[in-house]
Amino acid sequence: MLVTAHHLNDQTETFFLALKRGSGLQGLGAMQQQSVLFGMPILRPLLGFTRTQLENYAQKEKLNWITDESNEDNRYDRNFLRNEILPKLRERWAHFDLAVQRSAQHCFEQQQLINDLLSEIFTEHCQIKNQFKLCQFRKYSLAKQTALLRMWLAKNQLEMPSKRQLTQLINDVIFAKEEANPQFQLVNKVIRRYQDSLYLTKRFSDLTKCCLKLEQNTLNLPDDLGNLSVQENEHNLIFYWQDYSVTLEKTNLPISIRFGYSGKVKHHPKRPREDIKKIWQELSVPPWERNRIPLIFYGDKLKSAVGFFRVFDAF
Image 1 (cartoon, rainbow, N blue to C red):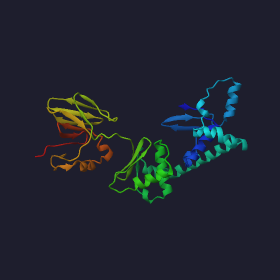
Image 2 (spheres, helix red, strand yellow):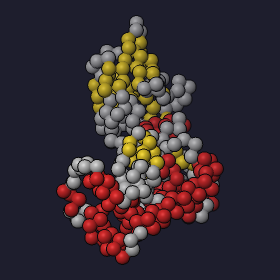
Image 3 (cartoon, one colour):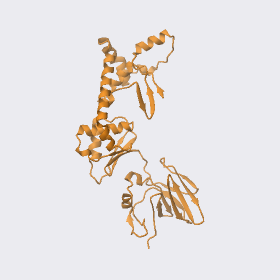
Image 4 (cartoon, helix red, strand yellow):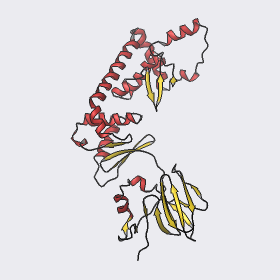
């Protein structure tokens, strides 16, 4: 649990910063006394007190506090509001902060109402946290589309995009041509479309030119893919990666691990050689995952995509 010292003046500043960004109800709802961030409960017990009230209490109780010198730097938007704009508004309207707090609470409650009304249909679209199904999505109004997408992003605890960004996501990704593999970058995440669903993923490194020699029993793979290990028995080598494994015959050729391959392979003894892209499609492997699956090579010959298919010799 995290307990913060945010007070009523902080709430006003947060509301105005959201207003400056053109935020919707979610952003204008500002801070709540209780919330959750990345699974951590956050409490703000002082949100109902003004800064002056807290300073008076601290002085009365002879408490010491630290003043951050950067708070005087009006190049920062929050400081500009705090030092230049809001004092004039409070001078004109003594209860201005309380009025802003009420408005923020109204926005929060309206957002909660929208979420409640859309809860059932949202559950139909989002049964897995990082996946959003697009079935029937085209039939909704733009307002309903954006509301559902905001709910999905909020569920994944992402910063809310602007209206322009949401419109771009809908037009360029959701409604892109069926054969396209569109994507949309949002901070350090990527929203991708595949088989009538949106997927939220990390930003992955390009591993297509990566080639690692397997010279020991364990190999550390790049880009947080974990370890690949190999065990040997009398006749075979057994390769392990995550929850997958594959058994291959022993070899005297150098063994390497790669992540990119194009061309035809024979992945079934009774089927002809087929383009590897078709094989990935049959296995329902999304395009961004295909270059993240370890490919085992004996010399220059592909032998297996660990956990997905083996390559058989053509006769």
